[in-house]
Image (cartoon, rainbow, N blue to C red; front, top):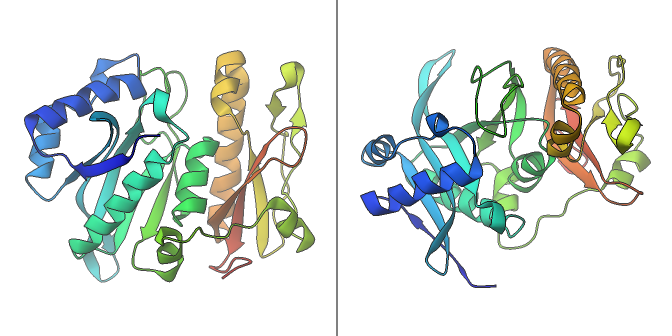
Length: 290
């Protein structure tokens, strides 16, 4: 595999390549593409557009800008990481992690300690990167965050999102950004520790996972909440089932967050006949490790 090159993108030529890549990552609606003049303006005013290249081809980018969050002591600065996209032909190669690691380094040099972004909580690949590999946490569920999107990945579904917190100066994040691989707990570790799932997931027609009708309120300090391992496959094969998963997960996570739980880890388990994807939620900030 050719060596991946990561660098800031600041010229009109580089930003034009980001425009083109957006149309490959989110096909179906040019309206949803962030135009070059907005990206350039952001980069000239504290924002960051970072690109990943293989053999001089742009295969991924991440875009963010300074923002404000409002806390009891008043407004404080943060970095809002708005978009990250990887070329469909170059996924599963570590491009996303490399981009976020570069963003982690650059935002720290700007003197900020907090990065936020949103993602679809039903996308297992994104959850694994954001929660498990990067060390972000979440206790904020945003309903229909972007209204109706018309691109091929989002059309027809409410745009519910997790808003994650990435505390980039914390030991938790530093361990995951280090040169040595971070040790992740598997599903068997949680089961041996007595951590059980909140609800069973059954297989329905076509072999697709189906959410239950209801779930019981949690009683333990650590709980597991399962999602489909391939939500895109469900959307393609059974769109009403995809909507069922959206509204079921909305109920689950809104209730868990209201009860004081925090997403602290994510498990992708391949030990059985089919892969399983589960969020780990903690009442408080501790996990099995921390």
